[in-house]
Length: 287
Image (cartoon, rainbow, N blue to C red):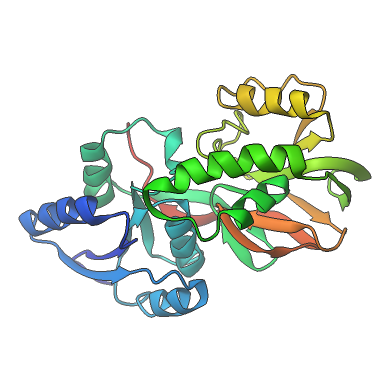
């Protein structure tokens, strides 16, 4: 076992310039050993490169958003490697569960201990925050080539357009029950926020061994717009078209409906979603 902690800085090259400078400064000031790896935007290649660090580092500090964090958790799930985050992406939805200052994020990433948290899994892809089927995946797919400072605006604009245009799907699924419903989307939440600040699953916890299954049923445009607006405050849960359940596993049997995980488009159904209990050593900030 290594007696001196070694760090890997995994960073998004377009989003993390300032934060990378700060983290380097803090590590060098504390006489810490570290390596660096920029992401390329190609998930498979980046995942393979990242997995080569499993035996060489103790802790990975992710400088980016939910997509960069998703890359790290897929590389280091069910290993001894600790994962921390300094949020600097376009959405940062997973990090919204804490109210840390930029300095607190850096300090926690470097020196705070980790603890085991749950992950979700859709087929063979892990997610740390939220995975979904339907409308949200269509929005993510439409925004796939939108990066940088305009990404958040693009996501909001595509979200409104898709809310008007997207045709709800008849989803045949099994979990706590077997059913077929016409849904705008079905999401599986380990974290509370998604979509650039919507508090989709206010009761979700990262260490309870469960996923929150959020179903948004088909409804007229204005009622869906109401749900969208109320979701930013977590006040959508009482609406007639919203159903929230807790579960450990569910399968969607309908074919060819889009899937997103942590804001990344990953393919189409059919798919099985499950919770992976205590699968990641994550640095949960104390703030």
